[in-house]
Image (cartoon, rainbow over all chains, first blue to last red; front, side):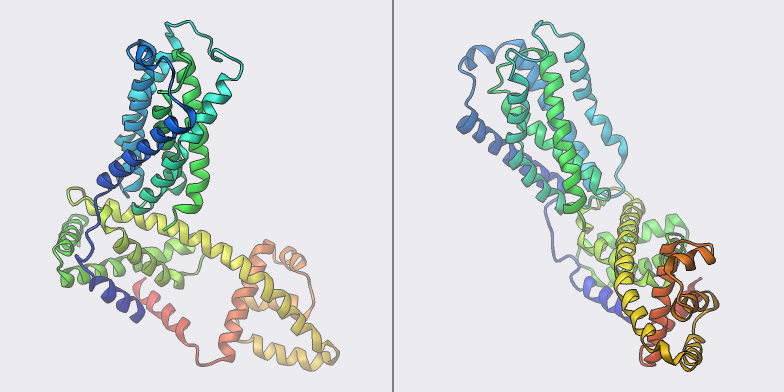
Length: 209
Length: 202
């Protein structure tokens, strides 16, 4: 019992000492850094689309940006929820816009492009590019998540994986040559699912505190 | 203290901590520790652990609370935040303790059986002596230890005979060894005193 009293005394002696940044700030900064890393990799390794200026004003690019953007925002809100003990689960509703874009993209694809992309290797290239682009984000975001207090490490890890993939996908929109909304909705989401799985496995180990 | 009073009191103390008021914070930590001590012992027993391990878990939770206190939003209620941390730490603690126990049991059990097996030629004398030592054990532990160590039954046979699992037999033996070691060394009185504290709180 006395050892607990000693512990309490030593904990209390540091009251008010450390003012670490709020989780919101930490995640915002980390998210921005992650996106910067992913963009850098797109420019350096994959290269943006040759017809970028022309493509950037058309609907498919708008859809890609809207879908990946809503994923980034939605998963970030869920990440804050996962990092805060006792937070309200209504945060999960913030994924709704992304789900709506996903469903619309699959059901009402106006482009008529095949869902396996323009070439045989489109799916593999697209998914593996997004996975590659999301790696720096994943490392940075795990560091940020460890600053929080995730009480469900498996879930928190999966969410970290999903944000990383969303950030990677957002950067990849600059390079992606496939304009079918169904293609984007399905295969970008598949990359998210893979990263969520990897994140969950890693989170189980890394996010203990 | 009702739940509302507790919520207000502790949330206020958490805000005081942010202003650097160590005294209020220390008082709150003591109150939290006392409340946890009371509520965790039965939960640990239900999870298959010993109630006297509650103190370790209380300390884990206090360290967690302190280390992650910046994740509490002062505009939101404090108790749900604390409960989520408690729950996480309880799950984490039981998982690791169980794994540790199985690991801890495996080695000493084999060694211990070897030690007991050795003087088997002098059977009658050692049996009497073993019986004298085993007297410090509770009946359940004594039966299992005697079956394995004196009568030479395997863990599986003992489990069959007492209609329990092999894991339970191993855990029982592990506890019995600890108790026997404790009896051999009268200096280690930590455990009994802790247990008394818990009986007081219950």
